[in-house]
Structure formats: C-alpha cells, structure tokens
Length: 162
Image 1: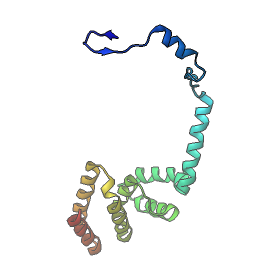
Image 2: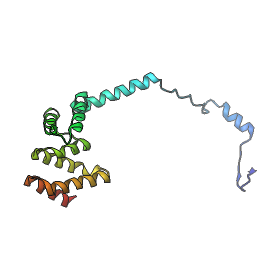
Image 3: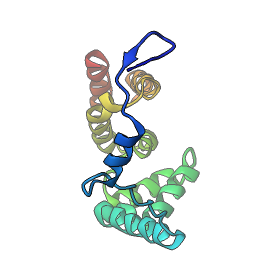
Image 4: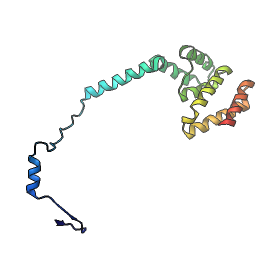
C-alpha cells in the first residue's frame, strides 16, 4: 500500500503485475491511429452534400432561383419590384424562408401578402426575438397603412394573438 500526499491510501500494483498484464493475449492494444481525410475526399463529401441539398430543395436550390432572389433584393423599393415579385412567384411559388418572405411585404397584391403573413405566422415561434419584434412592427405598420380591409383585419388579428 502506498500513502499519497493527500493522505489517500490506495493499493498500487507492482511492476511485475503491470508487466504480467501487458503480456496477456486479451490485453487492450494501442488504438490504431486515425487517418485524416484527404483534401480530395473532403471536397467530394462537400460536393455530395451540396448536390443532395439541391435535390431536396427542388427549384429553390438552383442558380436560377438564387439569381431571381438577388434580383428581388436589388429591386426592392423600385417601380419594377411588383413585376419581379410576380415573375418570382409564378416561377417558384411562395418561398418558405423568413428573409425572402420578409421581402414580399411590399408587394402590391394583397392576397399574396395575406399568404405571406400566414406563412410567417407559422414560422414565428422558431424565429429569434429580434426577428419576432421586426415582424410585429411590420404588422403594426400594415394595420395602420394597408389599403385593403382584409389585410388590415388580418394584421390586427395577428397582433392580438402574437
């Protein structure tokens, strides 16, 4: 038995016992070294994931979608915005991501904006507090300024429930 500095007394095996344990056939061997993946295999894995994501996203994973989205962002606040949104919705349908939906608040078609609001309401709980606050602020603006009574009523109702 060996006494340690902290006063703990433990049984410690002798060097003979340690050597005997090493010689046993079932003694654990040193684990093989892990191989680092090569740069090529890492690149291939990333390409595979990228292609798989595109497959699951459908049209929304294409370069054409990204280009149309960039066009929407660049035309926001201009006279061509409504035309670009209409073309975007005809081609790709209503988006399902928060930031793209937020762009569509300024679209002049009240029916489409109502659909955007309903979609965003479904996503509301999963958003950050800042995004939620921005959404509520946009609803307050719509409640006060929307020319369509349906849109105003929906914004008012959503503000009460959020």
